[in-house]
Length: 134
Image (cartoon, rainbow, N blue to C red; front, side, top):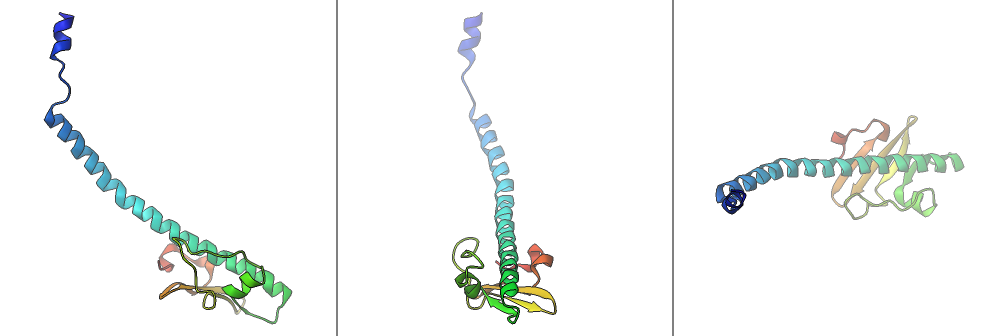
């Protein structure tokens, strides 16, 4: 009798195989957009982190010379207050346009690359993801 049961096992039917493929397709349709959102949020968070690093470097530069209240990214990197900053997703910021400005006791950052202004004169301590352009 045991041999008879083994012989009747023929594997998956075409319908069962199609059902598995449909289920995998549904899972992929749900997972792919959420992964894309995670990548976008990570890039925005990286822009904010870069802005905070620029403020920290500007504070160091201001301690050395309190007569200046505006520091470009180029100045901060050239004077070694900041390691070279890379834009999330590849590429570079415009080093002469991207800057930190001390405005009425608040450090404000502008980050620009190409035609995109990622952060426009905002305090990185109060930035939210919605304030950052990709």
